[in-house]
Length: 240
Image (cartoon, rainbow, N blue to C red; front, side, top):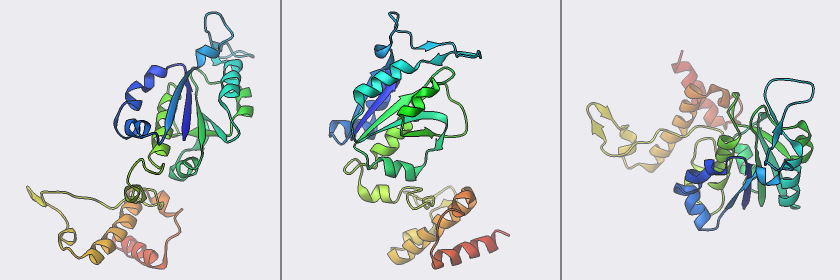
C-alpha cells in the first residue's frame, strides 16, 4: 500500500515514521508512506497557501489550487482521497479495515480555519477522529496511517490483530503477566489453571463484561450470539 500525506508540516511526522511498527513496516516494504509539502504547489512566489475567506470571517483559509494540483499529480485510478476534518465521519476500526483493502490513500491535512470548500469535490471520504477540534490534520493523519498500516498482511502477527479490541466490535478481555501475586493483587485463577477451554470461556465472557461496563454504546451495535446474549443478561442482573 502507498499512503501519501499532504501537509504544511512534514517534519511533524519524523518520529512517527522512524519508530516501532510503522518503521518496520516501511523497511519491510509492506507500506510506503510519502510526505508532500503543500507549499510546493503554491501559486504564490512566497509559497503562501492561505488567504482570507470570501464573505468575511475570523482567521485564514487554505486555498483550493494547491490541493487541486497535488491531488491531480498523485491520484491514480485506485486512489482514495481522504480529508481529515472534524466535520467528517467518525473514524473507527471498521473503516480502518475497509481502507486496509485499498492500494493507495492520499491523506489531506488541513490547518487554520480549514480548507476552501471546493476541495470536497475532489475527495472520496472525510474523516474525523473525534468530536473535538485539533490545530491541524497531522495527528489524525498519523492515527489513520498507523491504524490502517498495522492491518496490512505481514505488518504484525495475524493472530494478534484478530484479537485486538474492536476487531469483533467488542473490547479485549483483561490480560495479565508475571508475577501472579503482588502485594495482594492476584491474577485470576482460571488463567493459571492450564484449562484452555475454561480460559477461552472466561475471555469470551470478559469481552462482553468489559464492553458493557466501559463502552455500553458498543454493546448496542454488536450482533451477539445466543450464548453471548445469555452472558450479557447475567452481567446486567449482577450489576443491578
